[in-house]
Amino acid sequence: KDESTARASVTKIRNSSRSHAHKIQAAIAMEQRAKAAGKSKEAAIFRKFIEQQKKKTKAKAKKK
Image (tube, rainbow, N blue to C red; front, side, top):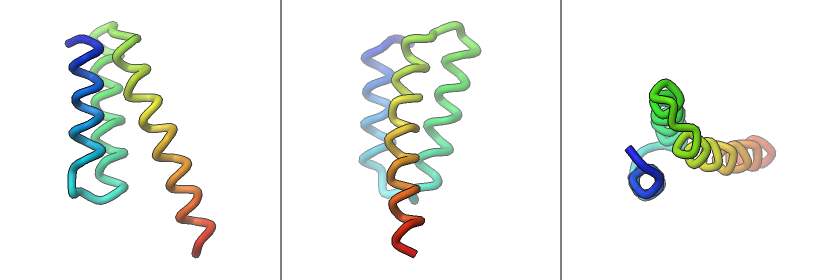
């Protein structure tokens, strides 16, 4: 809908008790919805969260 709603959605995803992979999938879905609706600012908010999660994914992979 708007930037504040996108930020609220990211907060909900971040604070959920779901797995790391589930959080990424949810954020990707929201980003794609925003892009399809022509809302590039909102999509960028989700993209930023996804990039942060990628760093966590790489850190987890190095620990193994």
